[in-house]
Amino acid sequence: MITEKENAMRVLSHEGSAWLPCMSDCLQIVPVSCAPDNFVDGRDWFGVMWRDGVPDPGELIMDGFEGWQDKVVFPDLDAIDWQGSASADCANIDRENKIIATIQNITLIERVNSFAGITETMLAFYQEPDELKSLLYAITEFRLKHIDKVVKHYDPDLMFFFDDYGSQKSLFMSPGTWREFFKDPLKKLVDRVHEHGKYFCMHSCGKIDDIIGDFVEIGIDMWDSVQSCCDYQSIFEKHGEKMAFMPMFDLQRFNTPDPGGVQEELHYIIDVLGGNGLLFPRDNASLLHPDNKEAVIAEIRKLGRGSYLATKGFL
Image (cartoon, rainbow, N blue to C red; front, side, top):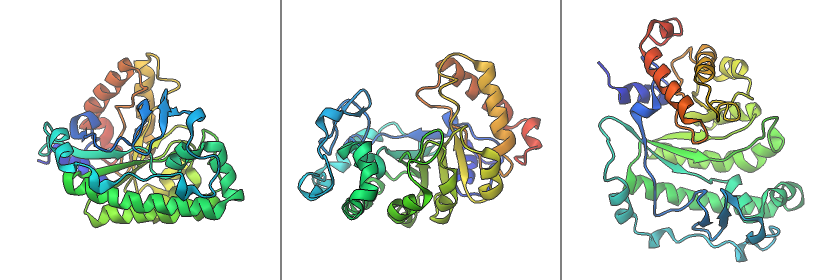
């Protein structure tokens, strides 16, 4: 009999799970406290000021990309006490029963946005493309070394990388522009994670259907935040055997109590995305109302080994 962790690992390896995994039962996210690459108010490790979860537009460190080398100061990864941080952060992890995961919250476009703001970043695709590309590759080199440090000292099974590429209607840029600026840097990160024998999960919100084939091509193991604005059916038909899915419930609808509604959405997600056993529903979204979160977890546990999923290819 396989364990909850082993069953969930079968989603990441694309073998297909024996039952629907419950994130709360089999995955533990470990903070990397020495690398404040997050949305907490105050200055992050690049010196960017965050307020109310976003970079303060009055304190951006760049107003354009020319001469970015004189404006962006990369943290000295060798000066950080990684071992001391990891000892504290990993003190209570359960490697035997849980997939251990770390998060890099602001990977490529979101890190550039934090420096210059999203308007300047969008303009740079056309007005300063060479400067933007050089900054993206510098960030990529930093991220590669960051990955090495995290793996050495935290030894996660799974690494999450956050970069939102779209709105609820479309990508922020054309698919061609995304491929020109982001596909190769992102592939370098995926390859490095795989070189270490770890799994790569891409958290990317928005209707980004047009680049999911690219995600598959560069080897991303799981897509987190598959949102209802995306065409689930088309995505599953094209990529359902090649990528694991971690869907996000509709947070605009379910940030208020609606346990029955969120369970109904779970059923729909299973119906459309669950056929190959590569489904890992996300039950811990911070904006999901606690009543709905509790209802989702209960329903996943109930359905997980039940006859409902036997018709979906899980059992």
